[in-house]
Image (cartoon, rainbow, N blue to C red):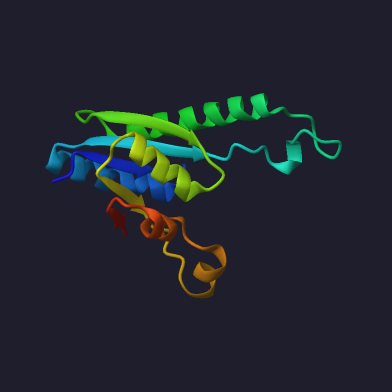
Length: 146
């Protein structure tokens, strides 16, 4: 059914816990897993190039993001375990949902598998939901793990 599962991860406990279900789904379908980590290309104002922040260049920010993404992706691969084909993608995009969709297109995925933080009510309205944004904007099916 599915041949390439696109799995956005953010380093949270929820995203790591969802990898067990992702591995089961991949095994059942003989599918490859493509892990996606999205970084914001803009340095936070706390250390941006400015007179108000600590000097930290865009290049330094990018290097820090690459290092952090590498750690998260490595830990995710360890959680998935052996016996599955796993690809990794680190993309830079100001909007998380756009980065996920961009990576899914480039990886030629056929489904995006996401964990939901289950923000409902006022909290959900105020904080929004990246999962919801991916569902609304993606042309690929989105499988939400509860």
